[in-house]
Length: 206
Image 1 (spheres, rainbow, N blue to C red):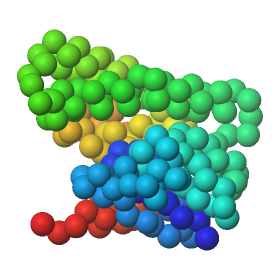
Image 2: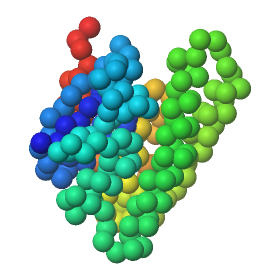
Image 3: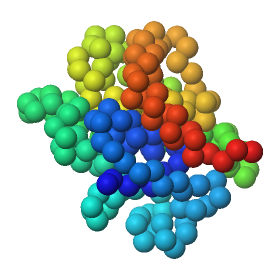
């Protein structure tokens, strides 16, 4: 059975959404990043980079959420178009996510919430970039149902992970009607709701 080492993070929830959407059985292994468990020796043996999620499939260990999404899509033949142009559009969004959206959102949240000293220049730089990216996605969704075209794909799952945690970088969907419509559509999917419930259950009760 597939194992997923994860916590209630934007990158972790992506993998659970994909597994739920694809109907794959999996065992969830909690890694409490708030307690630093991602730096424990046992976890570093799986991912020397010390980050969740990690997928283990019959001894095959894979890190990086985007790579995991592609692996699962190709394993099942789902949520990734077969035609060249369709696949290219999905990969375009995955690379945009990994190089632009995720770093901007993560850094904006870090400098707002976790920096030991105020860093107004850095906070403003990453928040402005995150806002710009939200605008780009909203504009794209003005002409199509989903981020890579008219069908729901792993590209939507990738973007949804951070949209689900918009409060961390202090962002909102206010004034972005197309992005709001897309978010509500994705959030209403039963597999997405199940994945969120499972990943949120990993957080210990206070």
